[in-house]
Length: 325
Ligand code: PEP
Ligand code: MG
Image 1 (cartoon, rainbow, N blue to C red):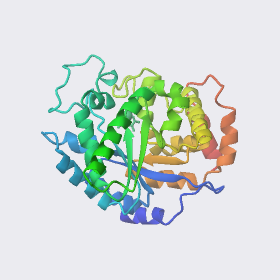
Image 2: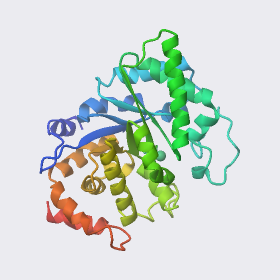
Image 3: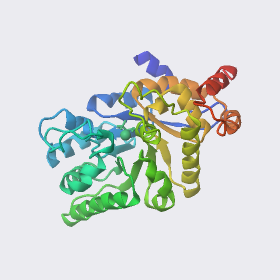
Image 4: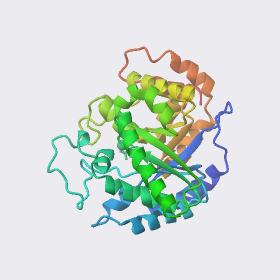
């Protein structure tokens, strides 16, 4: 494994026609962090903070959280880390947060930022810990499951309260705070003119976005593979999102599982994504793929595909990949 990483790390993450692609990691535990150095990824595009919460039996207090987040930042050699605030609820309910009993539609239920906004003290404690851990260093915070701009504003206000509180106490603030949101609830796609001026970055959660776009449970084996993220619907909406972000000058990445599958990653680069965040084992295969990819040729090829009525563009993309090495 070490050897495999070594060969990959040495190669620049650039397509055959010279387009640089930033590869980032999805992480959730301290033991994931050595992969950052080993894989040569440029940063952590998604740190799922709920994972440490799920393995505990009580809610970690601000000190415990600060300690954890500091240790993460200490181990990342100044590479950027995007901390996503708690994304629990639905089927990921914590025993120490009183759950509404047995929701009928957990994926559509009381989860993620909805819990944070209903229990602002919980979210504020997490933000306080993130701010303290980042003293003198850059901090990037991302909110999960935002469905409307007003929710983003409300979450951001809690962050601002904590920044002011820290300053009032004479604490050292982060050197820079960047705030973004996941794009995983479709409604947000129709609020881009209001959203884009407010955010420092966006990241597409294609796992949940695919589930909500197709109304198709990502955890049910009968439905999870039924629709393809490489469908005309997903590809054209993602392409428009990337264009809107480009026009507004807002960096956009994608951190759903598709970003780590080489053929899917190829399509994402073809529609304009330049930052992909993936689990550590995907770095090698994706980098190998993109180093042999001619983006301009792929882009041209994909132009004709969106308006067709296919279930999936996968076969077409696979034959493109075969024909072009
Ligand atoms: C997603 O929804 O695509 C995502 C990255 O978040 P999670 O898988 O943690 O819901
Ligand atoms: Mg998600």
